[in-house]
Length: 256
Image (cartoon, rainbow, N blue to C red; front, side, top):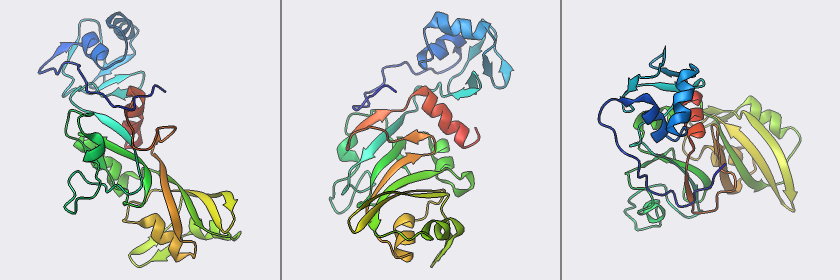
């Protein structure tokens, strides 16, 4: 996967109406205009559910364009960025207390005004998605779409054998029950253990509260994935733009 730690500004044109479909596809990064014409010719592109033909036009700001079964985000005004949030940074663009915030890292790297998808508390780190696509952001955060999030946590050990079953069955918290989708012991480090856990929940401090409730408080928490998007080797404090395939995977994750 190509790296883009700087998340550079886009110099692609912003369309205000319909354009030749191959031009729209090329501008969205699908390939050269000739390659896009070949995709259309081979009936691999649909616009609003109809198989496209050479000569068709599309409005990238309104039409639903699908290539090889995956929805393409062709509106170049929309941006999708992954960030590796450092520990100690608050998930806000303007902190009243003057603490280190997201805007300190984004700066001029992203020209458009973006918003974070969900939150990570100041003491947590890892993957954060930033976008100006309000519709997709809402779906990614809404519990009804059940987008899976995975974390790597350092917790107080040792880990008893029955803990996994208990977490997968469900634990009652003060604001209702919660259960994990997956849990595994990764490593044991003296009196601490490293565990990987996944859940669809989005309640505030849910991982920390859950692990504290079962007697294994968290000392470090890193989010490693949101749905199909992985943190990978993105360095702390860096950003990169999502690829077309990753954006398509996010649409698929929320049923679009």
